[in-house]
Structure formats: structure tokens, C-alpha cells
Length: 481
Image (tube, rainbow, N blue to C red; front, side, top):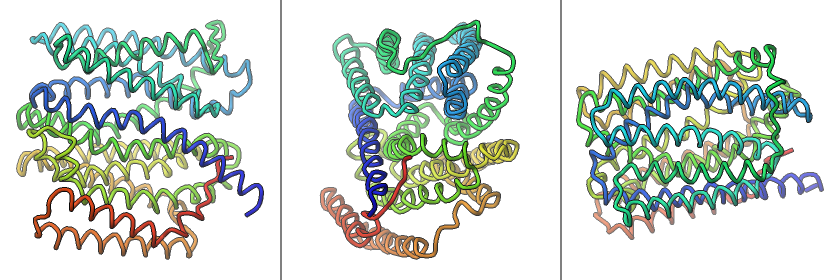
């Protein structure tokens, strides 16, 4: 191994380690909060929280998330002292306009609501969305500047404080389920105050530098982000509204918590991986798009080699995970977990295709694929949930993501064209995982083993996989420069 290769491997490990720590904290907090609070609040309360939180997720995607996506896209272009000030100033102006719209929508919703709990949830969700979006935007700049350690420490402290405050508000001050949102408001408000005072990223804003040319560029790209984010969010979350249409809030609460706990582990690892590779990948896509294909393939291969087994082993142990992490009234949803695991993974996989289309200016194709996928998902939910039950929300989500990835593949087959040696390894991987999955589902499920024995067997399967592919895993080369 050359000195450059050793440096690349060392840099990747360092950044991956810090981003992993940053995600382990919130993931661990989620694994604590879910069993604690699903044993304390009932399914109907979680149903009300789910509807309000998902609604604000849509509002966040519509009004704010596309602004943060502009940071990822144009940071390299504006990367001079004066240039970044122009970027930050124009983005903050757009954020202010979105904030005004959000205020009107939230006030109207509160006035229309007829229960105090829903009004509380709307008010706290409004504040949390504002503070959280500002915080996340600042963290994007932190990640783009390579401050992985700072990002990790800040996120870990923030996650611990949010858990401690939620527990205090619920079990000491005897607050209702709105405490799960108000605790986030207080923590994010404090985090923003500290960031504003310390300003580790050196962000400067001058409203005199707001100009039409920059706004036009940002709005053009942001409009794509708006369509894309809303469409993908519809695939992930619109099913709650359909469940509420056909069933009760209890079913909404069950599905919402099962979905969140299923997405948490997979999404955390996907986020860690892309946080690590994005600064280098975006730079290559911007500077040398034609030459970026090999780089994307180098990132895709470990994403499959390590990601697919994680999905399979979590799927095998779905019932055990639900038994540990969910209250008794929520555990019936374990049958949906394997489908949510895989759907979340495919969403992450689609990022490779999405970036290629964005940087090749094929924005209409990207938006079209996203919209078609969202419409398909809504249609499938309306048809199958009404006839076969709310569990079909998980199945239709997976079907929609499979359909979307197939459309992406049809448009850009080169992304998946890996070298023959790597393809052979991946075929062996799929064969081994298929055999293990069939053994577990055909034989182990009929043996009525205790939970501890089933978990132990799942861990043995995972260890077998690692030992068999140890050489392929340890020799992975993932560039970060």
C-alpha cells in the first residue's frame, strides 16, 4: 500500500469514526426514548403527535430543507471569504421569507384546531422546526469545513440534553406528550445561542450583498430540491394520513413508532457514510463530472457489501428488536420492520443516482422520477390499505423505492457497472445472505427458541459473514480527498 493510499484510508477511518460517534449518540437516545415513552403514553397520543410532526416535516421540506441543500451544492463555488458571505446572506433572506409563510400556516392551523393537545403540539413543533432548521444548516457548514470532531461532540451533548430534559419534563413535571417536542425546542434554542456566540464556522452575513443573480441561481436549484424532497417525504410519511383516513389514531401511532425505530439504525449509518464521503464526492462531481463515475462506484461498492448484511440481520431479528424497544401495544408492528429496513436502505442507495443527475443538470429527469414515485406510493396506499390493512403502508413504501431505484438505474446504468471481481464478491454475498435468511425463517422460527437464543444465532450469522468476507472488507479503499 502506498503512502497516499495509507493516508486516504487513515483519513476515511478518522472522519467515519467521528461521524459514527455523532450518530451513535442520537441513535442510542432514540433506543432509550422509544421503549420508555411508548410504555408511558398510549397509542392515540402518539397518533396525534405523529400527524402533527409529519405535517411539520412536510412544511420543513417545503420551506426550509431545500435551502440547506443549496449549501451542499454551491459551497465549493462560493468558497472565498467574500463569496461565502454572499451565499449565506442570500440563503438567510430566503429563510426569512419561508419563516413568514410558516408563521401564517401555523397560526391558521392553531385557530382551526379544537383540542388543547393538538394546539400545544403545533406551537412547539413550529418553534422546533425553526430552531432545528437553523441548527442543521449551521451543521452543514461545519461538515463542509471538515470539523468532524466538533460536529460529533456538539451532537452528542445535544442528544443527551434532549433526553434528560424530556425525562425531566415528563416524569418530574408531569407534562404530556408535547414534552417530547418542547424539550427539543429548548435544546435547539440553546445550541443556536452557543453557535451564534462562538461561530466556529466563521459565518458572516451582510444583507447589502443580497442580489437577484444569486437568488435566481439558488431558487432554480432550490425548486428542484423542493420537488424532490416533498416527493420523497411523501413516499416515507404520507402513509400516516392514509392510515388516519381508513383507521384510528391508534394505528397511526403504532405504525409511526415502528417506522421510526426501524429507520433509526439504518438511516444513522447511511448518514454517517454520506457525511464522511460527501465533501470529497461533491468536490469531484463539481470539478470533474466525467471522471467522477469511478469515484461513485468506489463509494457504492462498500455501501452494498456492508449495508445489505446489516439490513438482513436486523430483518431476521425484527421481533426481538420490537420486544426490546417498543411498548407492548406497539409490538404487533414487528412484521413491518424488514420492509421498512430495506426501504430505508434503498432510499440511501438512490442518493448516488440523485447526485449524478443533479450535477449533470438533468433536473427535470430527477424531479420527474421523484414525482412519479410519490404518486405511485399514494395510489398504492389508497388501494391496498383500505382492503388489506394498515400494515400495507410498509409494503407499498418498499415497492415504491424499488420502482424509483429501477427508474434511476434505467436512466444511468453506469453507476452500477462495477468491475467483474467486485460483482463476483457481491453475488457470493447475496447467496450467503439468502441461505442464512431462509434457514432462520424456515427452520428457526418453527423451533420456538427463546429471544436470547435467536439473538445469539443472528450474531453468529453476522460473524460468519464477516469471517467469510473479511479480506474484501478489510481491503476496502474509500477515498475522502
